[in-house]
Length: 178
Image 1 (tube, rainbow, N blue to C red):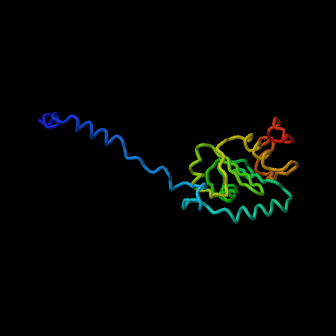
Image 2: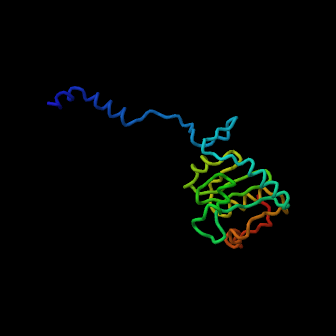
C-alpha cells in the first residue's frame, strides 16, 4: 500500500535523494586556521603570539654573531617522546606537533613539518612563521643557503641532534644556493 502512495511521484523521491546527498556549499574561508594574507591577519584563538620570544632569540642570535639558529624537536637523548621541559621548538613556534624543525634568522622564522601536522601548525602558529610543507634536511639546508649571507654562521644546540644526521656528508654547505 505504501508503494502505491509513492509510486505516483518517482520524481519526488529522486529530488529528495538528490537534495539530501548534496549538502549546501560551505564558506571555504576557514576560521580555525591562520590567514596571513589579509590585513589585519586573521589568527585563530589557538594561535600563540611568538613576537616577544622571537625578538629575544634574535637578540641572542645577533649577540652570538650568528645568521640563523636551528631548533629541532628532540631532546638530548634523541627520544621519540620528549618531556615538556624539552619542548624547545613547541615553545618558540607555538606548534605542539611531535615532528618538525624550526629555523630562525634575523629576518625570518620558518617551520618544516610533514603533512600530518600542516593544519595543526596553521592553527597554532602566528604570522611570524612560514610553514614549509617539505620534509628532510635538504629543503632546510637549501632555504638556509638562500636566506643567510655568504660566510654566515648557523647556530644550534649540539646536544639536540647529531651533525652526521642533520648535515649529511653529501651536502656541500660552501656552495651558494641557486
